[in-house]
Length: 244
Image (tube, rainbow, N blue to C red):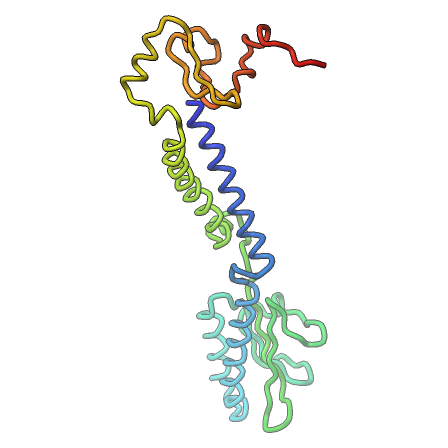
């Protein structure tokens, strides 16, 4: 059980390092897609396309078709919450959605992520502008965060990475475990000894402990393999003291 917990902690540590590395690389090189930047480009293209449609309708003064076109943009636009067509003098000629509530004039007339403005020309003169209000980009509630790509990536890396690292470490440690290469007949003969016997390496780490020793030692249930023999509590009193 102690071995399983140790492998689990190591696997969790490797997962944490992997996620940290991905986030650092994303911060440095932009590996993950920039949702805000992509949304800005898409929204500017939608607004420009609508402005092109309205330009020809404005020149023919087809108010009914202009209103229908604006209404269709709001009802079918997904993230579009309101659209307004405003003359150069400031008169709002056509609107759809609650444009008075959603729209506000941006600094220097520049577009933002949620408010896009596109100029409309009649001939060579500026006739007015098309104003489009969009929903905020990114999660707005806790359930939206659960579907966010970055959160899904972190969850997938955590779960998938932990399972893969855990399985891999178990297989690797089986090959590195000194007891795994000892034949069963040798291990059985070792366990028949009535005296408690330890086999340690040159650095004092325990490689084998027979059954008699495991029965005697109070810490045997927490795992002895790999521990330094000097760290065993009940042996400290009999070990020679280090010179001061």
